[in-house]
Image 1 (cartoon, helix red, strand yellow):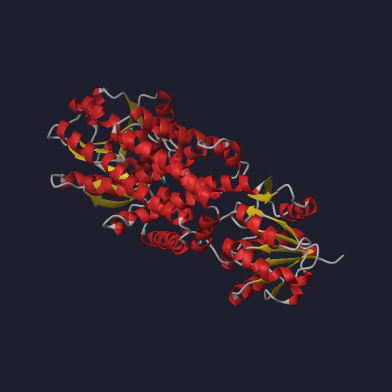
Image 2: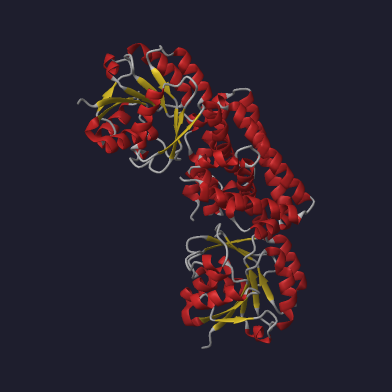
Length: 290
Length: 290
C-alpha cells in the first residue's frame, strides 16, 4: 500500500510540529511534503525530519496530495487556496490550523471546486515561540484540537482528518465555526489582547526599566502569550473582530466595576470578585481535560 | 553566642517559607517562633520545621524577639502591631511582607514607640497557592525582595534585615514606599485584576463549561495569578487604590484603542500593537535579573 501523501503549506512552529507529529504517529504510512517561501525553513525541516521533501507552491507535483494542511497566518490562506486549487486532484482534503474559522470557512468553501473537500481545524496548542526551530513532535499531545462540522461538511473527509490527527495524541472536539469563534475569542483572543496591554502599559510610565526589574514569575506568566507572533494576532483580530470586540467590551465593564469598588472602598465586593475568579479558575482546571 | 530570636506572625505560605528559608540559611544562628490564630497551621509549621516554637500573640515571651516579621494580609497588620508593640523590647526590628507599602509605612511608623524600628519589605515571590502546606524553603531564591528606605529609615535596622534576607538567596532592591507602590501596581496589582477579569469574563457567556473545555496552556498561564488569596488581594486594592486605579484606567485606554483599530480594520496599527508587546516583553525577560 502506498503512503498517504500529506502536504503542509507553511513550515513554521505549527506546520513543523504537525510534520514531526504525523510522521511519529503514522511512520511509513504517511509521506510529508513541505511548502514554504522560506528556503532556510524548508532546509531545517528536511534536516530535522519534519518533512520528507520540499516543493514550491505552484509545482504540479502538488497534485499528488491526499491531504493538504494550511499552516500560514489566517489572512494568507485564501490567497494560497486560490493559487493551489487548480493543481489539486479530485478527492483531495484541504484542512487548516487557523485560529479563526467562520470567515475562513465561508471564503474557502466559496472558492473551492466541488471535488475538493474542506475541513476547518484549530489546534489549541499555541506557544509564544514561532518558526520551525520551535517545532515539537509532542505539541499536540493531550491538547484540544477543534474540527469544524457544519451542516454541509463531508463526513468522510471529517473522519479522515480526525483519524489522522487523533493519533498525534490530540483530543478532538467538534463544533461549528460560529461556536468556535465565540469560544476562541473568550478563551484565547481576548486574553492575548489583554496580555499585550499589560506589557504595553509599562511604557505608559516614565521609567519602564525600573518597573521591569520587579517583574516576577506572576507578571511573566500573565504576559507569556504577549510574546506570540504579531502577524498571526493581527490577522486573528481582523478575522474574528465582532466576537473579540464583544469580549473586550465585556471585560472593560468588569474592570470599570472594580475601579468603582476600589474608589468606594467596597471591600466585600472586591473580596467577592477575587474569590469568584479563584473558585472559577480552580474549577476550570479540574474540568478542562487538557 | 545566643541565637537571633525571630518571630513570624502569620504562618501562611510566605510566613512558613520565610521560616524554612531563614533556618536553612542561618542554621543555629537563628531561632524562629511562629504566631498564628490557626493552631493547625502552627502544628504543621512545627512538624515541617518552619518554626522552632509557637506562641500566642499576647504572650510576654514575645519580648525576646530581636526581629519580628509580619506575614498576614495587609489590613490586619496595623491591628497586630498595636497589640504587640507594648510587649516588644527596645531595639526590636519590625518588618513585614505586605504587598503595598506607603499607607502601611505611615500608619506603622505613627503608632510605634521610637525604640522599635520598622523596615517595610515586599518579597516578589507570590504564588497562587496559599497556606502553610504551600511553604517552600526556596521561595525567595533568585527572586526580588524590596526593602523600603525612607529618609528617616534606620540604616542599622535596614542592614540587619537586608543581611538576614539576602542569605535566603533573594535579590534585594531598595526604594521608597511611594516608588514601590507605583511599580507594584503596574507589575503586579493591575495584572492580578486583569487576570481575574479574564476568568470572570467566561461567566458573562451562556455556556462557560463549553468554553472552559477549550482552555489551553495559554489561558491557564495568563490567569494563573487569579487563583491567589482573595483576602490578600482585596486588601491590596484598598491600600494601593490610587495607583491601581491609575493603572487600570491606562489599561482601559489601551484596550479601547485596540477595539477602535479592530472596528476600523487597521491592520498596521494592530500589528504594531502586538509587535511592540512582543519586543518589550522579550527585552524585559532579558533585563529582569530574576
